[in-house]
Length: 150
Image (tube, rainbow, N blue to C red; front, top):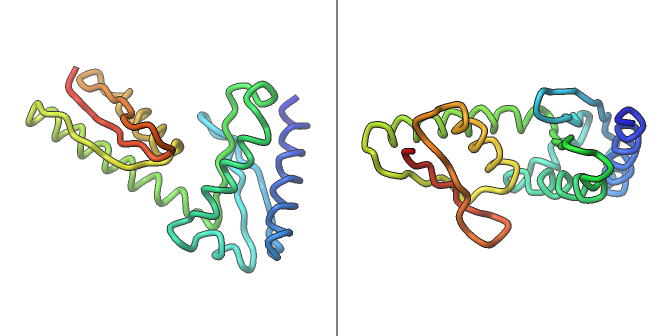
């Protein structure tokens, strides 16, 4: 099932970027917590402008077009030129810093506003530490994550 779905996702992504006037190569990478669609080629940097807004939009479109009932727990992450890998590392480092600060001060710390993908990364980092908990606060697409002692 997943290989057929993955083929459909790759074709969909290629069609969307082609409609944007870009000729990009799309490859899949299975990861423990997601399936990464890596885009590369001349012009891929267009997707990274304005803090990767086009990349974020493409990711939302892909995960909406291929609903959870078709993909199960598989979550597609769209990346271009390893932009998200760098941002993920920064976000993980910030979450760990805030976890340490919560443990030191005993007071909740906030990070955000974050999109759903970034919030998920923070929640996963927090889940690795038994001394703290996290929750998303807000009612919009971008929410703040509050990290607090248990």
